[in-house]
Image 1 (cartoon, protein in one colour):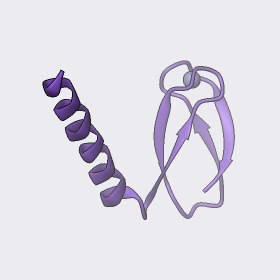
Image 2 (cartoon, helix red, strand yellow):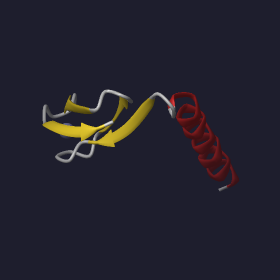
Image 3 (cartoon, rainbow, N blue to C red):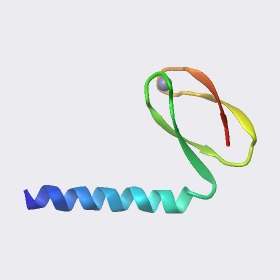
Image 4 (cartoon, protein in one colour):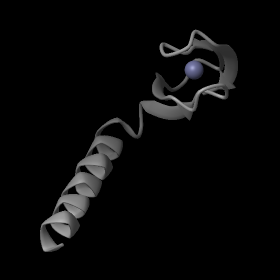
Length: 62
Ligand SMILES: [Zn+2]
């Protein structure tokens, strides 16, 4: 049980670290069709995104 909790926190810290590292230049979106998360560079205005998982095309403002 303790091991699992420890692992959970470690995983969470890793995720936060990634967000801190890329948080300014990248934004995270989820595909509306399959919920597959993907990161997109910020500052392009409205951009067309293609989901690498299912091929869904959707528009997002970054
Ligand atoms: Zn998708």
